[in-house]
Length: 593
Image (cartoon, rainbow, N blue to C red):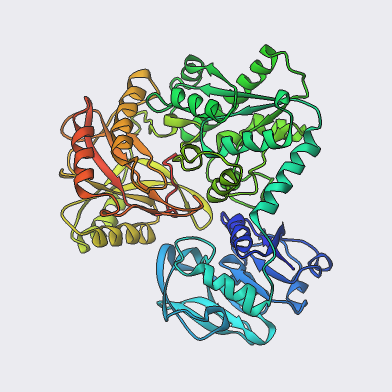
Protein backbone atom coordinates (compact mmCIF):
# COMPACT_ATOMS: atom_id res chain seq x y z
CA UNK A 1 0.00 0.00 0.00
CA UNK A 2 1.78 3.10 -1.30
CA UNK A 3 0.82 6.75 -1.87
CA UNK A 4 2.48 8.86 -4.58
CA UNK A 5 3.14 12.52 -3.79
CA UNK A 6 3.39 14.58 -6.98
CA UNK A 7 5.93 17.35 -6.42
CA UNK A 8 4.93 20.74 -7.81
CA UNK A 9 7.76 22.58 -6.04
CA UNK A 10 6.37 23.15 -2.53
CA UNK A 11 8.68 23.89 0.38
CA UNK A 12 6.65 21.28 2.29
CA UNK A 13 6.57 18.36 -0.16
CA UNK A 14 8.89 16.31 2.01
CA UNK A 15 6.83 17.21 5.09
CA UNK A 16 3.82 15.59 3.41
CA UNK A 17 5.95 12.49 2.84
CA UNK A 18 7.05 12.55 6.47
CA UNK A 19 3.46 12.89 7.77
CA UNK A 20 2.33 9.96 5.64
CA UNK A 21 5.20 7.88 7.05
CA UNK A 22 4.11 8.88 10.57
CA UNK A 23 0.79 7.29 9.71
CA UNK A 24 2.82 4.16 8.89
CA UNK A 25 2.02 4.29 5.18
CA UNK A 26 4.77 3.98 2.56
CA UNK A 27 5.04 6.94 0.18
CA UNK A 28 7.05 7.98 -2.89
CA UNK A 29 7.75 11.53 -4.03
CA UNK A 30 7.50 11.62 -7.83
CA UNK A 31 7.87 14.31 -10.48
CA UNK A 32 4.78 16.35 -11.29
CA UNK A 33 4.80 15.15 -14.91
CA UNK A 34 4.93 11.41 -14.04
CA UNK A 35 3.00 9.44 -16.70
CA UNK A 36 -0.40 8.13 -15.74
CA UNK A 37 0.66 4.53 -16.44
CA UNK A 38 3.26 4.82 -13.67
CA UNK A 39 0.70 6.43 -11.34
CA UNK A 40 -1.60 3.41 -11.79
CA UNK A 41 0.79 1.49 -9.51
CA UNK A 42 -0.26 3.60 -6.49
CA UNK A 43 -3.24 3.35 -4.16
CA UNK A 44 -3.75 7.14 -3.86
CA UNK A 45 -2.23 10.42 -4.97
CA UNK A 46 -1.39 13.66 -3.16
CA UNK A 47 -0.72 16.80 -5.23
CA UNK A 48 1.70 19.10 -3.40
CA UNK A 49 1.74 22.86 -3.17
CA UNK A 50 4.12 24.95 -5.24
CA UNK A 51 5.28 28.49 -6.09
CA UNK A 52 3.63 28.68 -9.55
CA UNK A 53 0.17 29.78 -10.68
CA UNK A 54 -1.91 27.13 -12.44
CA UNK A 55 -2.93 29.53 -15.23
CA UNK A 56 0.66 30.48 -16.20
CA UNK A 57 2.16 29.14 -19.42
CA UNK A 58 5.25 27.87 -17.60
CA UNK A 59 3.32 26.11 -14.81
CA UNK A 60 4.66 22.62 -14.02
CA UNK A 61 3.51 19.94 -16.45
CA UNK A 62 1.32 17.02 -15.34
CA UNK A 63 -0.68 14.17 -16.89
CA UNK A 64 -4.32 15.32 -16.89
CA UNK A 65 -5.49 11.69 -17.05
CA UNK A 66 -4.47 11.23 -13.40
CA UNK A 67 -7.95 12.43 -12.38
CA UNK A 68 -9.44 9.50 -14.35
CA UNK A 69 -7.57 6.78 -12.43
CA UNK A 70 -10.49 6.16 -10.07
CA UNK A 71 -8.24 6.37 -7.00
CA UNK A 72 -8.40 8.95 -4.19
CA UNK A 73 -6.62 12.26 -4.81
CA UNK A 74 -5.86 15.01 -2.28
CA UNK A 75 -4.73 18.39 -3.62
CA UNK A 76 -2.89 20.68 -1.19
CA UNK A 77 -2.71 24.45 -1.84
CA UNK A 78 -1.43 24.62 -5.45
CA UNK A 79 -2.59 21.01 -5.77
CA UNK A 80 -6.17 22.01 -4.97
CA UNK A 81 -6.03 24.89 -7.44
CA UNK A 82 -4.61 22.55 -10.10
CA UNK A 83 -7.39 20.02 -9.55
CA UNK A 84 -10.08 22.68 -9.81
CA UNK A 85 -8.46 24.35 -12.85
CA UNK A 86 -7.83 21.09 -14.75
CA UNK A 87 -11.42 19.90 -14.24
CA UNK A 88 -13.12 23.06 -15.48
CA UNK A 89 -13.06 25.52 -12.57
CA UNK A 90 -11.39 28.92 -12.31
CA UNK A 91 -8.42 30.16 -10.28
CA UNK A 92 -7.14 33.72 -10.18
CA UNK A 93 -4.78 36.04 -8.32
CA UNK A 94 -6.40 37.87 -5.43
CA UNK A 95 -5.77 41.17 -3.67
CA UNK A 96 -6.05 39.32 -0.36
CA UNK A 97 -3.06 36.99 0.05
CA UNK A 98 -2.95 34.67 3.04
CA UNK A 99 0.47 34.02 4.62
CA UNK A 100 0.53 32.51 8.11
CA UNK A 101 -1.89 31.05 10.63
CA UNK A 102 -5.56 31.53 9.76
CA UNK A 103 -8.87 30.35 11.25
CA UNK A 104 -11.19 28.65 8.74
CA UNK A 105 -14.74 27.32 8.93
CA UNK A 106 -15.23 23.73 7.81
CA UNK A 107 -18.36 21.90 6.65
CA UNK A 108 -19.37 18.25 6.86
CA UNK A 109 -16.99 16.07 4.87
CA UNK A 110 -15.28 12.71 5.36
CA UNK A 111 -12.01 14.64 5.15
CA UNK A 112 -12.92 16.56 8.33
CA UNK A 113 -14.50 13.74 10.35
CA UNK A 114 -14.13 14.34 14.08
CA UNK A 115 -13.21 18.04 13.81
CA UNK A 116 -14.99 21.13 15.15
CA UNK A 117 -16.38 23.80 12.84
CA UNK A 118 -13.48 26.24 13.34
CA UNK A 119 -9.91 25.15 12.65
CA UNK A 120 -6.55 26.93 12.83
CA UNK A 121 -4.53 26.23 9.69
CA UNK A 122 -1.45 27.51 7.88
CA UNK A 123 -2.11 29.42 4.66
CA UNK A 124 0.57 30.42 2.14
CA UNK A 125 -1.02 31.54 -1.12
CA UNK A 126 -1.85 34.48 -3.36
CA UNK A 127 -4.17 32.71 -5.84
CA UNK A 128 -7.63 31.39 -4.95
CA UNK A 129 -10.43 29.27 -6.39
CA UNK A 130 -13.14 31.66 -7.62
CA UNK A 131 -15.32 29.19 -9.57
CA UNK A 132 -15.78 25.50 -8.75
CA UNK A 133 -15.24 22.75 -11.31
CA UNK A 134 -18.43 20.79 -12.18
CA UNK A 135 -19.41 18.25 -9.51
CA UNK A 136 -17.38 19.87 -6.72
CA UNK A 137 -18.71 21.55 -3.58
CA UNK A 138 -17.09 23.84 -1.01
CA UNK A 139 -16.18 22.14 2.30
CA UNK A 140 -14.19 24.98 3.95
CA UNK A 141 -14.05 28.78 3.85
CA UNK A 142 -11.55 31.38 5.06
CA UNK A 143 -13.75 34.47 5.35
CA UNK A 144 -14.88 34.82 1.72
CA UNK A 145 -12.10 32.66 0.19
CA UNK A 146 -12.53 28.97 -0.66
CA UNK A 147 -10.37 26.86 1.68
CA UNK A 148 -11.54 23.33 0.78
CA UNK A 149 -13.40 21.46 -1.98
CA UNK A 150 -14.52 17.90 -2.70
CA UNK A 151 -16.04 15.67 -5.33
CA UNK A 152 -16.96 12.88 -2.90
CA UNK A 153 -18.23 10.47 -5.57
CA UNK A 154 -14.88 10.53 -7.38
CA UNK A 155 -12.89 10.74 -4.10
CA UNK A 156 -11.27 14.02 -5.17
CA UNK A 157 -10.46 16.40 -2.31
CA UNK A 158 -8.63 19.71 -2.08
CA UNK A 159 -7.53 22.03 0.71
CA UNK A 160 -6.10 25.52 0.26
CA UNK A 161 -4.13 25.24 3.51
CA UNK A 162 -1.26 22.95 4.54
CA UNK A 163 -2.45 20.02 6.72
CA UNK A 164 1.08 18.58 6.77
CA UNK A 165 2.62 21.32 8.96
CA UNK A 166 2.52 21.75 12.73
CA UNK A 167 0.86 25.17 12.47
CA UNK A 168 -2.30 23.47 11.19
CA UNK A 169 -3.57 22.32 14.58
CA UNK A 170 -5.41 19.18 13.44
CA UNK A 171 -3.59 18.58 10.15
CA UNK A 172 -2.54 15.06 11.15
CA UNK A 173 -6.19 14.16 11.74
CA UNK A 174 -7.13 15.46 8.29
CA UNK A 175 -4.39 13.39 6.65
CA UNK A 176 -5.38 10.37 8.73
CA UNK A 177 -8.98 10.78 7.52
CA UNK A 178 -7.73 10.81 3.93
CA UNK A 179 -5.38 7.84 4.36
CA UNK A 180 -7.52 5.56 6.52
CA UNK A 181 -11.15 6.59 5.89
CA UNK A 182 -11.11 7.71 2.26
CA UNK A 183 -8.24 5.57 0.90
CA UNK A 184 -8.85 2.63 3.29
CA UNK A 185 -5.10 1.96 3.64
CA UNK A 186 -3.52 -0.09 6.46
CA UNK A 187 -0.44 1.03 8.51
CA UNK A 188 2.67 -1.07 7.80
CA UNK A 189 5.66 1.34 7.65
CA UNK A 190 8.19 2.04 10.51
CA UNK A 191 11.13 4.43 11.05
CA UNK A 192 13.39 1.55 12.16
CA UNK A 193 12.85 0.04 8.71
CA UNK A 194 14.05 3.31 7.12
CA UNK A 195 17.11 3.32 9.44
CA UNK A 196 18.08 -0.20 8.43
CA UNK A 197 17.67 0.76 4.77
CA UNK A 198 20.11 3.67 5.36
CA UNK A 199 22.70 1.30 6.85
CA UNK A 200 22.34 -1.07 3.91
CA UNK A 201 22.67 1.84 1.43
CA UNK A 202 25.90 3.02 3.11
CA UNK A 203 27.42 -0.47 2.88
CA UNK A 204 26.43 -0.87 -0.75
CA UNK A 205 27.74 2.58 -1.72
CA UNK A 206 31.03 2.67 0.22
CA UNK A 207 32.14 -0.94 0.12
CA UNK A 208 35.67 -1.11 1.54
CA UNK A 209 36.61 2.51 0.76
CA UNK A 210 37.21 5.38 3.22
CA UNK A 211 34.77 8.02 4.51
CA UNK A 212 35.55 11.42 6.01
CA UNK A 213 32.61 12.67 8.08
CA UNK A 214 32.11 16.32 9.06
CA UNK A 215 30.85 16.52 12.65
CA UNK A 216 29.56 19.75 14.18
CA UNK A 217 28.40 18.19 17.45
CA UNK A 218 24.74 18.46 16.50
CA UNK A 219 22.37 15.52 16.29
CA UNK A 220 22.38 15.45 12.46
CA UNK A 221 26.11 14.85 11.99
CA UNK A 222 26.32 12.66 15.11
CA UNK A 223 23.61 10.35 13.76
CA UNK A 224 25.40 10.27 10.41
CA UNK A 225 28.61 9.20 12.18
CA UNK A 226 26.72 6.59 14.24
CA UNK A 227 25.11 5.12 11.10
CA UNK A 228 28.55 4.93 9.47
CA UNK A 229 29.88 3.04 12.51
CA UNK A 230 26.98 0.58 12.23
CA UNK A 231 27.57 0.06 8.53
CA UNK A 232 31.37 0.12 8.21
CA UNK A 233 34.58 -0.92 9.92
CA UNK A 234 36.02 1.65 12.34
CA UNK A 235 39.23 2.01 10.32
CA UNK A 236 37.21 3.20 7.32
CA UNK A 237 35.86 6.27 9.13
CA UNK A 238 37.65 9.60 9.74
CA UNK A 239 35.85 12.36 11.64
CA UNK A 240 36.79 16.04 11.60
CA UNK A 241 35.33 19.05 13.40
CA UNK A 242 35.99 22.36 11.64
CA UNK A 243 36.23 25.29 14.06
CA UNK A 244 35.49 28.18 11.70
CA UNK A 245 35.49 30.87 14.37
CA UNK A 246 31.72 31.29 14.44
CA UNK A 247 30.97 28.75 17.15
CA UNK A 248 29.31 29.68 20.43
CA UNK A 249 31.38 30.39 23.51
CA UNK A 250 33.56 27.33 24.31
CA UNK A 251 31.37 25.21 22.02
CA UNK A 252 34.08 23.48 19.99
CA UNK A 253 35.62 22.17 23.22
CA UNK A 254 32.33 20.73 24.46
CA UNK A 255 31.43 19.35 21.02
CA UNK A 256 34.67 17.38 20.64
CA UNK A 257 34.42 16.08 24.22
CA UNK A 258 30.81 14.89 23.67
CA UNK A 259 31.71 13.10 20.44
CA UNK A 260 34.71 11.40 21.98
CA UNK A 261 32.48 10.12 24.81
CA UNK A 262 30.47 8.12 22.24
CA UNK A 263 33.66 6.58 20.90
CA UNK A 264 34.27 8.86 17.91
CA UNK A 265 37.90 9.86 17.39
CA UNK A 266 37.56 13.46 16.22
CA UNK A 267 40.26 15.51 14.51
CA UNK A 268 39.74 19.21 15.31
CA UNK A 269 40.70 21.63 12.53
CA UNK A 270 41.32 25.28 13.43
CA UNK A 271 40.27 27.31 10.39
CA UNK A 272 39.18 30.52 12.09
CA UNK A 273 41.49 32.93 10.25
CA UNK A 274 40.75 31.33 6.87
CA UNK A 275 37.00 31.87 7.26
CA UNK A 276 37.39 35.43 8.55
CA UNK A 277 39.61 36.37 5.59
CA UNK A 278 37.28 34.70 3.08
CA UNK A 279 34.30 36.64 4.47
CA UNK A 280 36.03 40.00 4.93
CA UNK A 281 33.72 42.81 3.80
CA UNK A 282 30.92 40.46 2.68
CA UNK A 283 27.42 41.79 3.46
CA UNK A 284 24.94 39.88 1.27
CA UNK A 285 23.59 36.79 3.13
CA UNK A 286 23.50 34.39 0.17
CA UNK A 287 27.10 35.23 -0.66
CA UNK A 288 28.11 34.53 2.95
CA UNK A 289 26.41 31.13 2.91
CA UNK A 290 27.99 30.11 -0.40
CA UNK A 291 31.47 31.14 0.70
CA UNK A 292 31.11 29.21 3.96
CA UNK A 293 29.81 26.08 2.23
CA UNK A 294 32.63 26.10 -0.32
CA UNK A 295 35.23 26.76 2.40
CA UNK A 296 34.14 23.60 4.20
CA UNK A 297 34.78 21.55 1.04
CA UNK A 298 38.20 23.17 0.45
CA UNK A 299 39.18 22.24 4.01
CA UNK A 300 37.85 18.70 3.53
CA UNK A 301 39.99 18.30 0.41
CA UNK A 302 43.04 19.60 2.29
CA UNK A 303 42.43 17.22 5.21
CA UNK A 304 42.06 14.27 2.85
CA UNK A 305 45.52 15.12 1.48
CA UNK A 306 46.99 15.60 4.98
CA UNK A 307 45.61 12.25 6.13
CA UNK A 308 46.91 10.67 2.88
CA UNK A 309 43.51 9.24 2.09
CA UNK A 310 42.66 7.99 -1.42
CA UNK A 311 41.06 10.35 -3.95
CA UNK A 312 37.90 8.22 -3.95
CA UNK A 313 37.30 8.96 -0.24
CA UNK A 314 33.65 9.79 0.47
CA UNK A 315 32.47 12.91 2.28
CA UNK A 316 29.68 12.23 4.81
CA UNK A 317 27.55 15.02 6.26
CA UNK A 318 24.36 15.35 8.28
CA UNK A 319 22.25 17.00 5.58
CA UNK A 320 18.52 16.99 6.34
CA UNK A 321 15.60 17.11 3.92
CA UNK A 322 14.69 20.72 4.93
CA UNK A 323 18.24 21.84 4.02
CA UNK A 324 17.84 20.45 0.52
CA UNK A 325 14.30 21.79 0.12
CA UNK A 326 15.24 25.35 1.10
CA UNK A 327 18.36 25.19 -1.10
CA UNK A 328 16.20 24.02 -4.06
CA UNK A 329 18.40 20.97 -4.51
CA UNK A 330 17.60 18.72 -7.47
CA UNK A 331 17.79 15.81 -5.02
CA UNK A 332 14.35 16.74 -3.72
CA UNK A 333 12.67 18.83 -6.39
CA UNK A 334 13.05 20.17 -9.88
CA UNK A 335 10.53 22.95 -9.33
CA UNK A 336 11.06 24.29 -5.78
CA UNK A 337 11.98 27.95 -5.25
CA UNK A 338 15.32 28.54 -3.50
CA UNK A 339 14.90 30.15 -0.08
CA UNK A 340 18.58 30.14 0.95
CA UNK A 341 21.70 28.12 0.18
CA UNK A 342 22.59 25.81 3.05
CA UNK A 343 26.30 25.29 3.69
CA UNK A 344 25.92 21.55 3.02
CA UNK A 345 24.43 22.19 -0.42
CA UNK A 346 26.86 24.73 -1.89
CA UNK A 347 28.14 24.52 -5.46
CA UNK A 348 31.28 22.55 -4.49
CA UNK A 349 29.12 20.08 -2.55
CA UNK A 350 26.88 19.63 -5.58
CA UNK A 351 29.89 19.02 -7.82
CA UNK A 352 31.10 16.35 -5.40
CA UNK A 353 27.63 14.74 -5.36
CA UNK A 354 27.62 14.51 -9.14
CA UNK A 355 30.81 12.45 -8.90
CA UNK A 356 29.07 10.12 -6.44
CA UNK A 357 31.29 10.85 -3.45
CA UNK A 358 28.85 12.29 -0.89
CA UNK A 359 27.09 10.19 1.77
CA UNK A 360 24.00 11.80 3.35
CA UNK A 361 22.00 9.14 5.22
CA UNK A 362 19.64 11.74 6.79
CA UNK A 363 18.65 13.38 3.51
CA UNK A 364 15.18 11.80 3.60
CA UNK A 365 14.51 12.78 7.22
CA UNK A 366 13.47 15.74 9.32
CA UNK A 367 14.97 16.86 12.63
CA UNK A 368 12.61 14.97 14.95
CA UNK A 369 13.03 11.80 12.86
CA UNK A 370 16.81 12.10 13.11
CA UNK A 371 16.51 12.50 16.89
CA UNK A 372 14.46 9.28 17.01
CA UNK A 373 17.04 7.44 14.89
CA UNK A 374 19.70 8.71 17.31
CA UNK A 375 17.74 7.20 20.20
CA UNK A 376 17.38 3.92 18.28
CA UNK A 377 21.16 3.94 17.81
CA UNK A 378 21.73 4.48 21.55
CA UNK A 379 23.17 8.01 21.41
CA UNK A 380 23.04 9.94 24.73
CA UNK A 381 20.49 12.70 25.40
CA UNK A 382 23.19 15.38 25.38
CA UNK A 383 23.45 14.72 21.63
CA UNK A 384 19.92 13.63 20.62
CA UNK A 385 18.32 16.58 22.44
CA UNK A 386 20.96 19.19 21.58
CA UNK A 387 19.52 22.45 20.32
CA UNK A 388 20.22 22.93 16.58
CA UNK A 389 22.99 25.31 15.59
CA UNK A 390 23.50 26.22 11.92
CA UNK A 391 26.64 25.02 10.16
CA UNK A 392 27.74 28.61 9.35
CA UNK A 393 27.24 29.40 13.04
CA UNK A 394 27.20 33.00 14.22
CA UNK A 395 28.20 34.18 10.72
CA UNK A 396 24.57 34.01 9.61
CA UNK A 397 23.31 35.43 12.89
CA UNK A 398 25.18 38.70 12.38
CA UNK A 399 23.21 40.86 9.97
CA UNK A 400 25.74 42.91 8.03
CA UNK A 401 25.16 46.35 6.49
CA UNK A 402 27.06 48.75 4.26
CA UNK A 403 25.05 51.90 5.06
CA UNK A 404 22.80 51.73 1.99
CA UNK A 405 19.73 53.81 2.89
CA UNK A 406 16.33 52.10 2.68
CA UNK A 407 13.25 54.11 1.66
CA UNK A 408 10.56 52.65 3.90
CA UNK A 409 8.06 55.54 4.02
CA UNK A 410 5.18 53.80 2.19
CA UNK A 411 5.71 50.55 4.09
CA UNK A 412 5.88 52.51 7.39
CA UNK A 413 2.44 53.99 6.81
CA UNK A 414 0.78 50.62 6.23
CA UNK A 415 2.50 49.02 9.22
CA UNK A 416 1.65 51.95 11.49
CA UNK A 417 -2.07 51.66 10.72
CA UNK A 418 -2.19 47.96 11.65
CA UNK A 419 0.04 48.30 14.73
CA UNK A 420 -2.05 51.21 16.08
CA UNK A 421 -5.22 49.17 15.70
CA UNK A 422 -3.67 46.58 18.05
CA UNK A 423 -2.48 49.28 20.48
CA UNK A 424 1.22 49.46 19.56
CA UNK A 425 3.73 51.94 18.19
CA UNK A 426 5.70 50.79 15.15
CA UNK A 427 8.68 51.39 12.90
CA UNK A 428 10.16 49.62 9.90
CA UNK A 429 13.80 48.81 10.54
CA UNK A 430 16.15 49.68 7.64
CA UNK A 431 17.34 46.07 7.28
CA UNK A 432 15.97 42.95 5.60
CA UNK A 433 15.65 39.27 6.49
CA UNK A 434 15.00 36.07 4.56
CA UNK A 435 11.51 34.57 4.60
CA UNK A 436 9.22 32.26 2.66
CA UNK A 437 5.87 33.47 1.34
CA UNK A 438 3.72 31.43 -1.01
CA UNK A 439 6.57 28.89 -1.48
CA UNK A 440 8.77 31.74 -2.77
CA UNK A 441 11.87 33.22 -1.17
CA UNK A 442 11.28 36.69 0.20
CA UNK A 443 13.89 39.19 1.32
CA UNK A 444 11.65 41.59 3.20
CA UNK A 445 11.63 44.35 5.74
CA UNK A 446 11.51 43.86 9.50
CA UNK A 447 8.67 45.66 11.27
CA UNK A 448 9.20 46.56 14.92
CA UNK A 449 6.41 47.22 17.42
CA UNK A 450 6.57 48.51 20.99
CA UNK A 451 4.23 49.30 23.87
CA UNK A 452 2.41 47.46 26.63
CA UNK A 453 0.20 44.56 25.57
CA UNK A 454 -0.66 40.93 26.19
CA UNK A 455 0.97 38.13 24.23
CA UNK A 456 -2.26 37.55 22.30
CA UNK A 457 -2.26 41.16 21.07
CA UNK A 458 1.41 41.01 20.10
CA UNK A 459 0.86 37.81 18.12
CA UNK A 460 -2.26 39.17 16.45
CA UNK A 461 -0.32 42.19 15.23
CA UNK A 462 2.63 40.03 14.13
CA UNK A 463 0.34 37.78 12.11
CA UNK A 464 -1.64 40.56 10.45
CA UNK A 465 1.23 42.83 9.40
CA UNK A 466 2.97 40.45 6.91
CA UNK A 467 -0.41 39.14 5.74
CA UNK A 468 -1.42 42.66 4.65
CA UNK A 469 1.94 44.37 4.10
CA UNK A 470 3.68 41.95 1.76
CA UNK A 471 6.96 43.89 1.83
CA UNK A 472 7.35 42.76 5.47
CA UNK A 473 8.15 39.15 6.36
CA UNK A 474 9.16 39.51 10.01
CA UNK A 475 7.83 41.36 13.08
CA UNK A 476 9.81 41.99 16.27
CA UNK A 477 8.91 43.45 19.68
CA UNK A 478 11.15 46.07 21.32
CA UNK A 479 11.62 45.77 25.07
CA UNK A 480 11.56 48.86 27.31
CA UNK A 481 12.21 51.57 24.69
CA UNK A 482 10.55 53.96 22.27
CA UNK A 483 10.92 53.33 18.55
CA UNK A 484 12.62 56.60 17.57
CA UNK A 485 15.98 57.80 16.32
CA UNK A 486 16.90 54.61 14.45
CA UNK A 487 20.40 54.52 12.95
CA UNK A 488 22.33 51.85 11.03
CA UNK A 489 25.90 50.84 11.83
CA UNK A 490 28.19 49.66 9.04
CA UNK A 491 28.83 46.01 9.95
CA UNK A 492 30.94 43.18 8.56
CA UNK A 493 32.22 39.96 10.12
CA UNK A 494 35.06 41.20 12.30
CA UNK A 495 36.53 39.69 15.48
CA UNK A 496 34.98 42.48 17.58
CA UNK A 497 31.47 41.98 16.19
CA UNK A 498 31.66 38.18 16.50
CA UNK A 499 32.79 38.49 20.13
CA UNK A 500 29.85 40.80 20.91
CA UNK A 501 27.28 38.31 19.60
CA UNK A 502 29.09 35.39 21.25
CA UNK A 503 28.79 37.08 24.66
CA UNK A 504 25.11 37.95 24.10
CA UNK A 505 24.38 34.40 22.96
CA UNK A 506 26.12 32.96 26.04
CA UNK A 507 23.87 35.00 28.34
CA UNK A 508 20.73 33.83 26.54
CA UNK A 509 21.70 30.15 26.33
CA UNK A 510 22.71 30.05 29.99
CA UNK A 511 19.29 31.32 31.04
CA UNK A 512 17.20 29.24 28.64
CA UNK A 513 19.07 25.92 28.38
CA UNK A 514 16.82 24.19 30.92
CA UNK A 515 13.61 25.15 29.10
CA UNK A 516 11.88 22.97 26.52
CA UNK A 517 12.46 25.25 23.51
CA UNK A 518 13.28 23.80 20.09
CA UNK A 519 15.86 26.41 19.10
CA UNK A 520 17.00 29.84 20.30
CA UNK A 521 18.80 31.82 17.60
CA UNK A 522 20.28 35.06 18.93
CA UNK A 523 20.71 37.66 16.19
CA UNK A 524 22.93 40.76 16.11
CA UNK A 525 21.47 43.51 13.93
CA UNK A 526 23.24 46.74 12.83
CA UNK A 527 20.51 48.93 14.34
CA UNK A 528 20.88 51.39 17.23
CA UNK A 529 18.71 54.02 18.92
CA UNK A 530 19.93 56.69 21.36
CA UNK A 531 23.16 54.87 22.25
CA UNK A 532 25.31 51.90 21.29
CA UNK A 533 26.05 50.46 17.86
CA UNK A 534 24.01 47.24 17.57
CA UNK A 535 20.87 45.55 18.85
CA UNK A 536 20.13 41.93 19.73
CA UNK A 537 17.07 39.93 18.66
CA UNK A 538 15.93 36.88 20.62
CA UNK A 539 14.33 34.15 18.49
CA UNK A 540 13.03 31.38 20.81
CA UNK A 541 11.36 29.02 18.34
CA UNK A 542 8.96 26.09 18.81
CA UNK A 543 8.84 23.38 16.14
CA UNK A 544 9.09 19.67 15.45
CA UNK A 545 10.15 19.54 11.81
CA UNK A 546 11.89 22.95 11.36
CA UNK A 547 9.92 23.49 8.15
CA UNK A 548 7.29 25.43 10.08
CA UNK A 549 7.03 26.70 13.64
CA UNK A 550 6.06 29.55 15.93
CA UNK A 551 7.73 31.88 18.44
CA UNK A 552 7.81 30.71 22.04
CA UNK A 553 5.13 32.57 24.00
CA UNK A 554 5.72 34.78 27.00
CA UNK A 555 4.89 32.25 29.70
CA UNK A 556 6.64 29.36 27.96
CA UNK A 557 9.63 31.47 28.90
CA UNK A 558 9.07 32.88 32.43
CA UNK A 559 8.72 36.67 32.36
CA UNK A 560 11.34 37.09 35.10
CA UNK A 561 13.77 35.03 33.02
CA UNK A 562 13.18 37.30 30.00
CA UNK A 563 13.75 40.39 32.12
CA UNK A 564 17.05 38.98 33.39
CA UNK A 565 18.14 38.24 29.81
CA UNK A 566 17.25 41.74 28.63
CA UNK A 567 19.13 43.32 31.56
CA UNK A 568 22.18 41.11 31.03
CA UNK A 569 22.39 41.63 27.25
CA UNK A 570 21.75 45.38 27.56
CA UNK A 571 24.82 45.76 29.81
CA UNK A 572 27.16 44.55 27.04
CA UNK A 573 29.22 47.36 25.54
CA UNK A 574 27.70 48.51 22.24
CA UNK A 575 24.24 47.00 22.70
CA UNK A 576 21.51 49.59 22.16
CA UNK A 577 18.31 47.52 22.43
CA UNK A 578 16.89 44.00 22.75
CA UNK A 579 14.06 42.71 20.53
CA UNK A 580 11.91 39.56 20.53
CA UNK A 581 11.01 37.88 17.22
CA UNK A 582 7.23 37.37 17.10
CA UNK A 583 7.05 35.72 13.67
CA UNK A 584 6.02 32.21 12.69
CA UNK A 585 7.65 30.21 9.90
CA UNK A 586 6.28 31.08 7.38
CA UNK A 587 6.35 33.99 6.59
CA UNK A 588 9.76 34.20 8.29
CA UNK A 589 12.42 31.49 8.35
CA UNK A 590 13.93 30.15 11.59
CA UNK A 591 17.18 31.98 10.94
CA UNK A 592 17.32 35.57 9.67
CA UNK A 593 19.72 34.78 6.83
